[in-house]
Image (cartoon, rainbow, N blue to C red; front, side, top):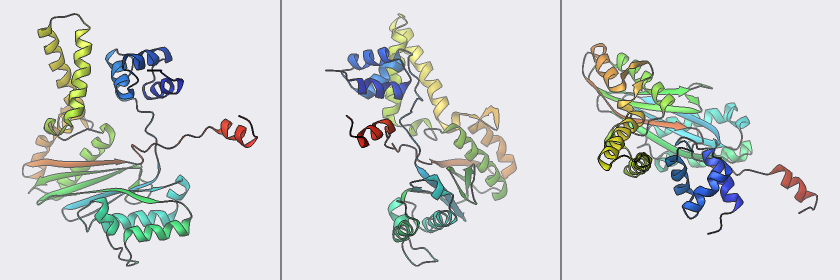
Length: 308
C-alpha cells in the first residue's frame, strides 16, 4: 500500500511522533491508522493520551438537580461569543431543568416541554437559531438517580450558575446525612473532572480497551527478551497499574492522594452516619470527540486569487 504524505501528517498530529517513525509505523501496519498508533505506543514513541484530533466545539454544559436525581446536558453553538450570551445561557439552563423531568436520554430531553414557553426543547432551540443567528443543537444528556442518597454535581470553571465547559455528576447510595454526602460527592466530582476515569470499577472498563492495552503491554514486554512466564507477570503488573489509573474507585483521591477514592469513601462514612456506595458518575467535557474542520487560510486566499 502507498503511504501518502497526508496519512503521515495525520498520524504525526495524533501521536506527536517524528515523520519517519510515522511513515514506518504506517508501512508496518499496512496503512491502518489505529494500528499504527498502537505500533508507535508499543515502541515507546507515542503516548496513549495524545489526542490532538479531539477539538472543542463551542457552547455550554449545564447541570440541574432535585431530590435524589441530577442531569447534565451539552448544548453546542458555533462560537464562544454566543456561549457568553445571556439568552443562550438561559436556554441551556432551561434545557437542563426540562431534562431533569425525563429519563435523561437525549431523545427524551429533546422532546421535553419547557415550562416558560410550552414548546419542546428541540423547537425552542430551533427558535433560538432563528433569533441568535447561529446553528445550535442539544448534543447529549445524561441523568443519574438514587433510591436513597444524593447525586452531587460540579461545574468546572463555572461561567454562570450551573453552567460551564465541564460538568460532572456523582451518585452516592446511602441512608446517611445528605449534607455530608453532598459535600463528599462534590469532592469526588471534582476528582472526576480532574482525572477523567474510564469506569467506576474494573468490570465496567470497556473490554476492547482493556484488550488493546494488554496487547500493547505484551509486545513491549516481549521486546525485553525475557521468558514467556516473566513476560506474563510483567503484563499482569502493567494491567494492574492500568486499572489503578483509569478506574475511579482505585485512583488516588486528588483531595487526599494518600487514599484511593474507595478508601476515602470508607473513611468519610463516619461523617455520613451510615455506609455509602458510589453507584455511578457522568463527566461531560464540552466538545469532546467532535472534530472541527480545519481550514487552510493560505489555500483559501490562493483559491480566491485564482491560483492552484
